[in-house]
Image 1 (cartoon, rainbow, N blue to C red):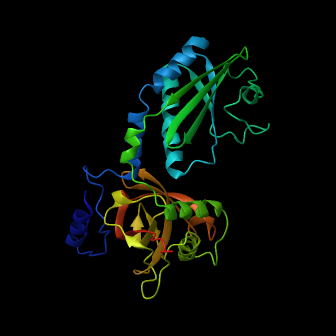
Image 2 (cartoon, helix red, strand yellow):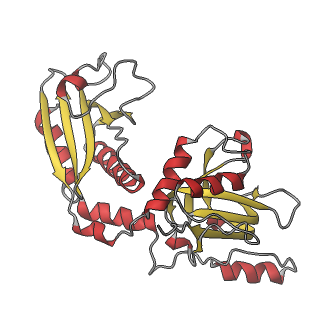
Image 3 (cartoon, rainbow, N blue to C red):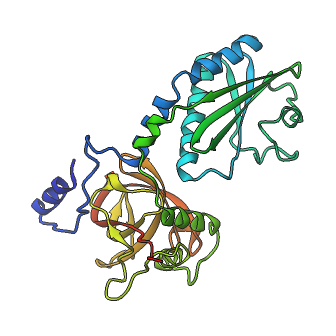
Length: 318
């Protein structure tokens, strides 16, 4: 159902309220997350076969595998999302091949008490004690160098024998993905560093204002104190680092703003675009986290009333 249809239905019930004027992503206009997922699936064709070949040639049928995914802090938000898709593909491939798996989501898994693991290094992986729970270790290390993407799989069986396979991703599919502006990247990086902390006076507006300062983007000025940059015309155009402004918005039973105040406001920063109108957002002065920066998920398809506007930070000219 489109946003305009929602507005008409509400008005027909005699409850005329502001409803987001941003239309839902049209079939012809894919959002950021959908474009990345499509690119990865196109670029990674054949990787599943490489994984199966690596395991089938060196493991017994139905082996139990500990899968370790490298926590690469050098990846930007887009590449982290690419790696997340590759992660799902890897686990799906192993499941389809009838292997049972357990996972270290990062090389710093809370369940591991040893030193930091270099998932591309055999000796480092061999330091993991399987303790009879697994028959093998499979590590996956994703890297991006000079625009070239690859994922290295390193397999160690119960005899401590190691085998590796490197799968390269095709470059062409990624050219269709819009670049995330540098100012947006700085916004996300700053917010992530402040998770669990209070920025300024702890108000939601303050977080957005401060991240714009840090990213050297234009900050709101009176009388438009809630205009954080260039207003986007569609939800599908949203990118990580864009800023959401809620006006008396009720979404999925939650009120974004002060309950009972029609013109109340709430501000949040998009951390990740999950696709189909869903987002991962960072904000403060919200929920149980109080005046500390926290992460929550948001589905704009559940918007009942109010207005949501998305802004793109505008870099200051040098």
